[in-house]
Amino acid sequence: MAAAKDLVRKPVMATVRLTIPAGAARPGPPVGAILGQLKLNLMAFCKDFNAKTQKFKPETPMAVSLIAYKDQTFDYVIKSPTVSWFLKQAAGVESASGRPGHVVASSVTLKHVYEIATIKKEDPGSQHLPLDSICKSIMGTARSMGIRVVKELD
Image 1 (tube, helix red, strand yellow):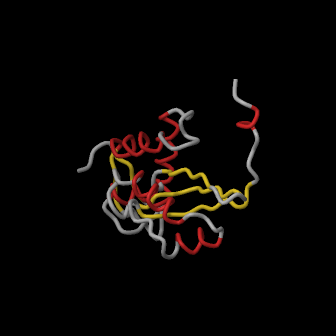
Image 2: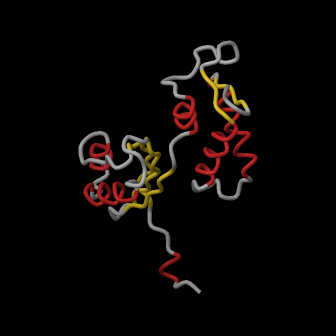
């Protein structure tokens, strides 16, 4: 059984969401400006974040949810990049269609959708979801971006 002091919650000062390129957290803006305002240890965050994201390709945008406590400590969770970023990479396009449903920007295969789903399943809050539900969600995102999902590329 957990000790009573482990169950005491720390008072939260702020919750911050950031998008930081993998392995590129620096004490300068935008990270430094936000964490400096909260008087958090910038160097500790940058070193830890960069160490945890070194397995990703540089410049991969990572979503970070950071909880700052009033005692100047913090916890954070790193999530994988957005589904739209993965779809753009798989389709080889810079941006989505300006007129989804009318103009097709590009195509991706079901294999791409499955691979994206397996990565997204590891995110906190998605572990309990079935893989087919995540795949359907990704296919809906692709449709809204004007990216067609096909069995095989021509």
